[in-house]
Amino acid sequence: MDLVQALLSGHRRALAQALTLVETGGPQARALLGALFAHTGRAHIIGVTGAPGAGKSTLVTALAAHWRRTGRTVGIIAVDPTSPFTRGALLGDRIRMQALSGDPGVFIRSMASRGRLGGIARATGDAVALLDAAGFDLVLIETVGAGQGEVEIAAAAHTTIVIEIPGAGDDIQAIKAGILEIADVLVVNKADRDGAEQTVRQLRAMLSLADLPVDGWTPPVLTAVAMRGEGIEAIATAAERHLAYLRESERLTRREQERAERELRLILQETALERVRAHVAPSDWEALIAQIVARALDPYTAANRLLERVLPQSGG
Image: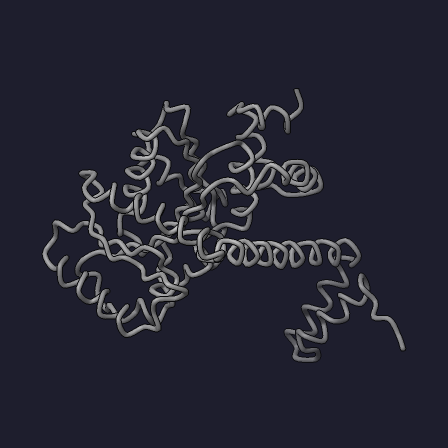
């Protein structure tokens, strides 16, 4: 059985092999994704983001356990910080999600961010497509926890859950960073701590000052103590309500268009760079870099020269 048929048949080893392949990239990975693309578009994609220490992994674990009790299957992509030595994921999230191990209805994959801004890895979209094609009802993406830079998750998910915690410091940073604007569901985790009610009030006040509702949806502000499983059902219900709203308002089609455009842009950037590097000798590449460093050539002119080798502009 080839890899495509094995993955579609539910073989977890085939899924793991396919994920490794797309993380590596290359023609084989692109061919695999092309063969599976028609089988995607069914999963509810949920992004979970927030600052380090907000309890993202614990919340994701609790949500997955809740949805498993309802009979739904869950794929999890946990984007971990990159090891400076191996360039691989540090696997902290995988360790924290051990409570889900052994459940055939859950698949967890740690991915290295490899220094990418936005809190998600380069191959996250491809990994989501594989889990979708493999038949998972929900795909949860946990971002790396970079704080202010994590707005990219909103373009990759249908529903974005933003986690805050009491006493996290300058609450106005949420607005400055764009984190508040991307939230479809806001969760104050560790709500058993002092200051939780104040954090909830502040978030609701911020929402009242913002230009909401957007297309009829106002993000609910919910509380949770994920470590004890408190508040999890309400969060899951809110995420499901948001998906229903997207479908009813036809906003889901718009989000899918946004996701498709984002993926197309990323793939074009990557493919163009690959083709340029394939057509340019290492010595020529280094010579251009040296010219930029010496201020003899600006980066835009250098980029245009490189692109013209691959995509010469037509005259006329």
